[in-house]
Image (cartoon, rainbow, N blue to C red; front, top):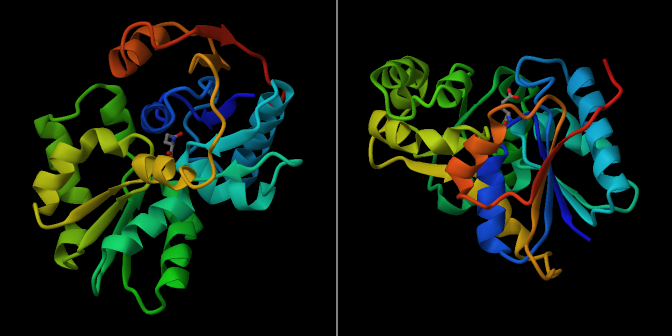
Amino acid sequence: MPLGVFDSGIGGLTVVKALRSAFPRRDILYVGDTARVPYGNKSAETVEAYSREIIGFLKSRGVDRIVAACNTASALAVEKIGKSGGVPLHGMIDSGVKAALAVVGSGPVGVIGTAATISSGAYQAALEAGRPGLRVVACATPLFVPLVEEGWLDHEVTEKVAREYLAPLIREKVEVCVLACTHYPLLKKVLQRVLGSEVKLVDSSEACAESLKGVESRISEKGEFRIFLTDEPGPFLGRVESFLGRGAVGSIERIHLTHG
Ligand code: DGL
């Protein structure tokens, strides 16, 4: 029985990378909703409907655990969907918050994510619940997603955008910054430079894999990685292989989900 992982598109591969390194022999089925990406500017109702469909698909393929490797889906839908018919469902928020609380002193904590993630207030609420009175500085930084997709990981334009977006976090002297979006771990170099070397970055992908170590025990023979996309694969395979390594992908297939 494989582990199911889904994201709005390609970003969840940062989570897959962390999961494969934590559980190298676990089979993984990954759904990238490439036909409907991005989720970060959509309503909670829409993201919930998309997430339910993908979860239904993964269950039909026999997964025994599902990771919503998308911070937006985690913030807007995971809690509401909850345990999905006996299959445990994990989002990104609890593990990211736990990792932030483990390293923060007196605060404040910064959180950056898509517009939908930040306006949901999910990270802010979880941080405040975990440490009452902790000051949280949350900022939507949506342009980071297309910049990563353009491959401008350490580019002067990305740095300019980061200086603009992160000004409130710098002004408030955040101690820790939670990278609450699948794409942002790829910008660590720029983010660290702009925020300053003393600010601790919490990579929610690594935190998610780390938190599953307590509950994951299943091992399969091959550690096979299969991808399902809701749009034509196009250059997806090449991009995955450049990120995860050649031969990392067992198969890549198009699927059709029903919601408009
Ligand atoms: N995967 C999304 C997230 O982690 C970012 C891309 C999108 O907006 O769909 O929030």
